[in-house]
Image (cartoon, rainbow, N blue to C red; front, top):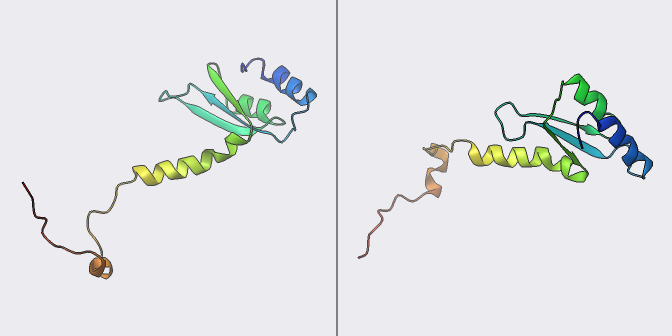
Length: 104
């Protein structure tokens, strides 16, 4: 769905029975450093794209899959955050400092 035709396209979706509260994400310049993401629903996405100055090229994602974005972002943050290199004293008993023997 194009940014310039988003009003017409969202009206058509609504006319064909897609609920107004259906989640929508618009991703401008996906995968680029300048990427912008706006989320809303069929009812308000056109005004949100105008408010946030979303321009082509932009990708529209429509449906419940949009709602898991926050969950995915949280998982990604946990996976990419630096892990502690030292353990606190209260955790020390949980870890054994046995030397590793090499075979071979």
